[in-house]
Each structure stands twice: as structure tokens, then as C-alpha cells.
Length: 458
Image 1: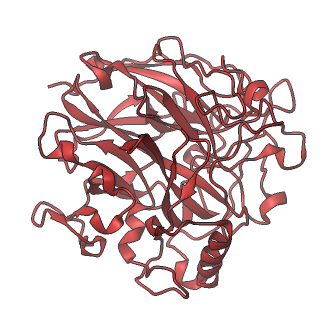
Image 2: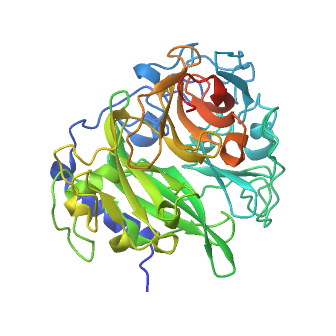
């Protein structure tokens, strides 16, 4: 029987980690960082003591609050700092419009209680509907707590992305509606995965990757998330662990499988009680991305590949793979140990000499997909800019990064590809992705013409 992370188990787990604080202190230790998702110049101290708020982008682009005055507020004071989107048109990439926020076409403040959020990790639910998971989310900035939720979900059937993403209304109890809505709480998206909300213990829980996989009776949804212990200086944060949560009702409710928890520590050690021993290499898989193996390869198409990075935005990328039915069975995962050793069966066997790195540091929040148009895997990441890499195989070699949104042009992070992008479905160059802008603390949609990215197509 699988162990499930109940609230009591979560308290026990993070309590044990807090008690081991001297061991769990990472190279980039805890600190404070200004954050202004409601445009108030540093929300967070009232809830977390010396911590600050936000998802993995909340520490700002290049350590700032963005390029255009995020400490300001919009004309309506309770809906945060979002401003009208100034269009960006580059050589290969352009903005389409806001996905979230009161100024988006989805009007997410009035319809879902979302004035600010980030990430928008996107995946096909197995039935042609796109699900999007977001990080720390805020609503009415004038009420106590600012309607903060650790994470929320939006759903859409819109696969015509040329004019944006349309999210339908949320309906209580309707597992296909625009969001998770509780009875008696219309127009308010519910939180998915809980956290203790205590600075230097567990500040928040943030999705980093998601995928739908078949099981008896349909598809199960999976989110890989990180438990954030504390925020640090720009681009640095410390995680307690990463874990996999699953949903059998299209994202309405989520359960964390305790056996998937990868506790983050700079050493190998045993923890008290029934907690699994900590392996040093767990730290290489605190954030990540899922991708199905290329369909034209009889070997790779048998696997789901998981790219992993350490907490923060300054680590390298590593690689694991597993059969789809084994996503919750970590002892059946294989790990890339470098060209000389190939795949190994134990995370402890990943060498620490750099040979297992598939993409060198720094790698930030990322998404990866197979593109039939390019006949290559595509990886997006970036901080301030957006970068694109390609490879024939998940383990690489990966190309040098190609800049598709220049640094300072829009000031973005967390590019998350949309599964219905024509470049991911057929012979079209159009790649759509969500990306977050800290100064407005919201998510926008962009389009890249891969045919215009120098060197991307063979």
C-alpha cells in the first residue's frame, strides 16, 4: 500500500527537516527578497516573519522587481500591479497577450479570484484538454492574506492559439470546467497542493512539471512539485524536497505519494521515524520537466524522461527515465550517468564529476518537448531572456542556447510550452509557450516561429 502524504505526515516531515536545519543549510542560504505580487513593495513579512512571497520567479528577474515598476499598482488598487501588455515583436518571437490577470482576456480576477500568479505549466490531460498549473497565486490585494493560494489550476479546450488562450468559466463539481471551484465559492480557484506556509520551515509548494499518463479507466494527472523551505537572494531558494502528486479527477483533488519524496540535503543521511534515507543526489532533481520519448524511436518511445535541476536558477540539468506505469515507483527509475557509463539503476550512482550533466549550468525553470517539425527535442528556459536548445536525444548533446527573447526586452522567466502548439503536433514552425513577467506578476502567451530561429532546423 502506498504511503500518502497527509497533513500530519507533512508536518512530521518538514518538522524533521527543520530540526536538521544545520545539515540542510545549502550553499545559498536563506535570506530575504523583496516581492510585490500585489504591488505593495514587499508582501510576505506579515505572514512569514523574515521570508518573502512568490513562486520560483518571485525573487525577481536579475534580482529586481522587473523592468517597469512592479512596486506600483494598477488603477484599481485591489488587483495588483498588472499593466497593459506592451507588444514585443522580435526576429522569431512575439507576444500574443496576457493569459492571467485582471487585464487578460480571461479576466481571471473577476472569474477566478486571480490577480497575480506565475508559471502556467501546461500539459494535455490525455483527452485533448490542456491543463495549466500555476505557482503562488493572489486575489484581492486589500483583504487580509490577499487571498494567497500556493498553487492553482486552469483548464482549456482552446487549441487555436493565434489570438490567445480562452479559459471557460469554473463550475463547482465540474471536473472539465475552467478551474477547481468549491461549492458556495463561485469565481474563486481553489488551491491544489497544501503547504504549511511557515518561513524557514515550508513557505510554499510550487509545481515544476506535469504530465498525464494512462491507467485503467482513463488518464491520471501527475504534478512534480517542490516544497520551498526559504527564499534567498535573487535566483536562490532552498527546498525541503520534491515529490509527485496525482489526481484521478482531472485535477480537482491531488494526493502526494510519500514514496516519491526526494529530500534535499547536501549529504547522505538517515532521518528519524519511518522517513526514507536521504541521498545526496536527490538534490539534482528538485525541479524539472517531463517529456515523452520521441515517437519514431523504438527505444526512446518506451520511456518518460525527467529532466532535473537543483533548487534555484544556477544548477545544471540531469536526466532520469522510467516506464509510464512506474512514475510513482522511484526504484524502477534509471539515471543518466554520462556517455561512459550510460544508464544506471540507482540515483546514488550518478557521478559527481560532471560527466552526468546533460545541460551545463545555469539552467532555470524549463520545459522540454519533442517537435515533429524540427525532428528534435526542444528545451526552453531563461531568466530575463528566453533561450532555446535542441537535441536528437534527451541525454544530448544539446545545442548551445539560442536566444529567442533578448535580455531586457520583456523580462521573462519560466517558459512553458503549450501541448497544442503546431510545432509539437505536426509540420508547422509555430511554437506557443507561457512565460511569466515578475513586474506584473502574471503569465503571458508568446509565439516563436522555429523556422526563423537560426540553426534550429537541420
